[in-house]
Length: 219
Image (cartoon, rainbow, N blue to C red; front, side, top):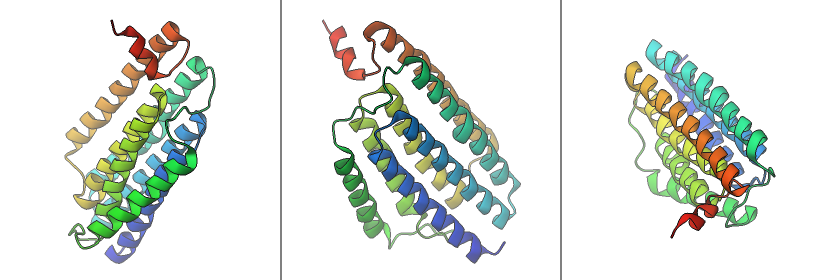
């Protein structure tokens, strides 16, 4: 695969990941939110795979496969189990309406694309839009975490934020050493497992996954 072809693919995939984040802001279903996260992680894995094939770096290819297995299958699966076992309703509880959230996400993405257009990553394959899309993914992921009230939705926002960091690592810097990649994925798995227990305890105590209920614990 030529660098020009790989660059076009990575740019298109990164833009699709941003679109998925905006869709995550718009959706009002926890199930669809987890599905969007799985799709976004799959796009990330494909971007890493394209980069690895174009550069001939087997380590990046292995990292992309691991991302597909852990972030697109295992972690969304765990979140779905949490939703099915503890969520009394699958509706997302948020501080902002879906249109307002999505509009803010679009504004953020366009603003960052404008500000960072003149500062692309300098890599062999190009992919000039990766910097702007990576930062957009991180900011929108943070917006999801802040604007959602349920623990599951906040975890999904954190994973979306991490997808932005992983996009930069896999496609712009051709990944981190494989041992570090494994450590990061293992840490994410532990975070979600801890959040699984945390969510069940919240539900057992308050009958809801709304983290605002934790305010009642203050003396």
